[in-house]
Length: 148
Image: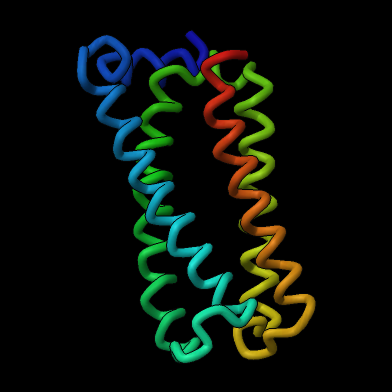
């Protein structure tokens, strides 16, 4: 038995229980909402919206919620993945989604590594547009997984 098969078999109750997989999908969607909603709020502030709000204070609040949302999405996604790993690894939409998540992480590391929250320059704005577009594409690929 392949290791991936053993993993999928160990987590098969997620697929066979009537409520397990749908519950994980709900948690996944809540995580995405927390992540993207707060990320867009911070990105709008980088563009100058809500200029009366102090950016460091807003960033502390929103980035904590982004991290919580990412954690929920990651953990629920991981559990969904291990329950059907073979099918997902061969699914083009899933593979593209994983590539986009890597791109999103790279963009976020670059954004924070270069101090974009302090600079608020054209590059920071470009990074926020890229971030939003990448996350929308991640969500789109996530939805397409079921149809490819």
